[in-house]
Image (tube, rainbow, N blue to C red; front, side):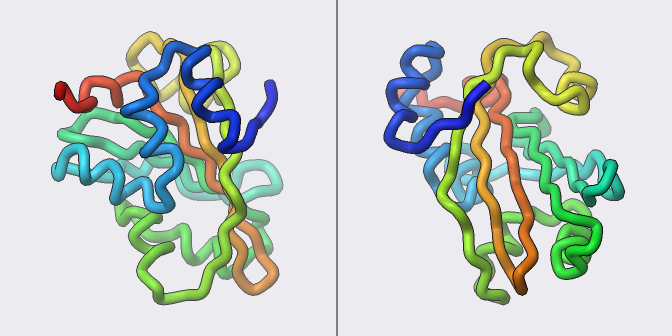
Length: 167
């Protein structure tokens, strides 16, 4: 398994048989919430887990369009990263809405991407999904505030394809 940069995204999506038109804009947009709402305005967040996970603090959510899970995401920070632990305790509010509200000056790393086969996916994602999974693309980035970091990994579920434009 290897993470790759945006300059390889088009090639990797093509090789994986994933729609460039659907995935590329959603993989490169800063706020995934904004991108998903552009597909369908019935957007919601389902909080799956918030708490300690080993040495880390974790928030796991599913982003939904019309009640259908299209993104499984996990935010991870050190348990001593007090800013981020408090920040992640936002219930079903979109983390993207908070991050890009302008309320705090938060830096973000460049995105990295990976194509996963079903057996390579995190157990929590596989356990949550009731569907049989096929190839899944994910993006990862790290946010920085007050010398503390938060890593966000977003997995684009195959169900997202049903919201592709039929133009």
